[in-house]
Length: 276
Ligand SMILES: [Zn+2]
Image (cartoon, rainbow, N blue to C red; front, side, top):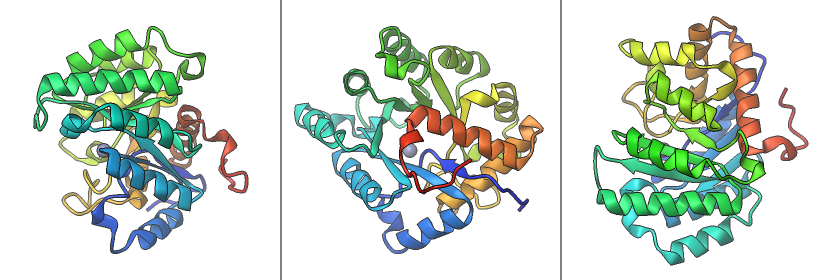
């Protein structure tokens, strides 16, 4: 690996999942060694959102998002909503997510997914937290929801509405999302040799609107494809991202970390850390 003096942020890693039960502290230590000094852990349902918040409360550099993933949309109800409001009292809860639509696997019925998605977008506006968006073969419906939602946001979310996580939208759609205050999440697939369309999109989108993520334990970057992913590997994504933008690894790390800090309001946390 190249040398790099700047810090990295992994803006999407599911460290609360049982995949990490055996070695979570080593995984966190390896992330630190790789220069990853901010991690965002999004929940997938109420139980995993709770575990994400617990993990964040234990580690100064770990933050949480709470949300019901479209796969589990059928678990969304008033109780979940009330619990999320309570969890969001923690300053470590910096986003609502991951939420969205998944018409590829359709593990929950589409109309149930849409209802849970809309309710959680409204909750995010109420709590003044950005959203972490999951999309799979549902970009048109997602954009419909986001365009409506983003027309009337509290000032705190101005230009910081959320992130299209592990973006697979085309260039035009990504640009529209950016114009509405969204960031674009760049994940492991950008390191795959055959992902030429994604390489082009990533290279053409503005540097100041992209953030890096692993989506661990899923989507491991090359050359670890197929293995369990972990936050330390965000560095592999940063290296490819730097190449695609013809900038140094240090600049890629600095810019994308700063973007993540802006989006998730990380400025006031961790006074003792030495990012930038
Ligand atoms: Zn995820």
